[in-house]
Length: 388
Image (cartoon, rainbow, N blue to C red; front, side, top):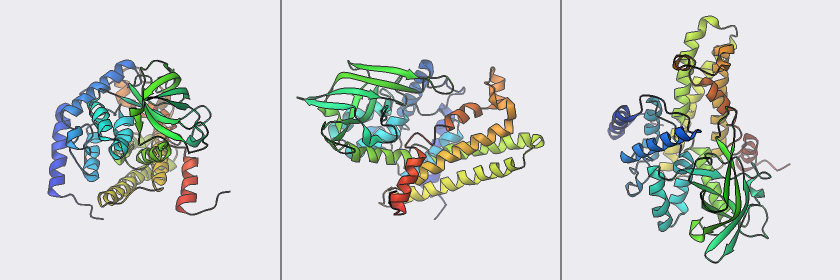
């Protein structure tokens, strides 16, 4: 692998760095799991869109810059280096957006992508159900055809960003006689439609990062079916590939966290009682760099016309467990003080976002498909092992 950057890539990096330096908010935004923070992050999405930085890999006609995946990785490196806000519309721009590009009609692209890029419409996931968590093929939430509409009934749960989002995308059973992954359709649903009820679910930190969504005779036009009726499983698996494989968790996120961990280690070296912590810090730093190199390799493969297959499951396991290790190591370095919620700005600066990061990292092996399911995929589809 050639690890050097071309002159045009270096120039692109400088352009990104200069723009972020001029526009990243001086003060951290409130959590987007609060109404105030959600709207503040929506405003930041609009700022990005004004500079055509909302999603740089999208075509210019849809608010992007037509960049390739290597340039996207460069953008992400500068984005995290600048300490820019987390993306409140990540479900839209990183997951649904690429799926729309591939499977949507021209009319659907024109309707949904510009509003997604501008932050005018923020998206939530509507995958899981009370009896169909990691097993999406067990979905029972129904969508029955009625003329030019579908009528949706049922319930979704653990819907990320749904508390304040404008739209949701999910799988619904459009063939009542079907079983497992057959007879499913991917449908885009406005969360302010008549018959939709959204109930917040509190996270470990007490904020409503998730929600239950109840559908009671919700009418949605057939126009909102993505990729055709009955094609939902195939299209959802493409979205899951984006979620697990490349887009959702760029390596820059973990590289910057690992660098912060190294700084924390240096500040607390004299307090260490457990020599294994030093080994953990080293491993975190090396694994973050290894993940970055692996992602560059995958991006180069895609730029060359390749595709992401079941190896996306390897990525998902790696970054979720790396995130856990980084934050568990930080908590060991901080000791009992790391369990305190910062009460003042000075304490926040001293303790950093380690506690929130630690709590969030616990969900990593669960969302985007549990790591147990990912190991099954690796065993069956990559290693050719038989089912038990």
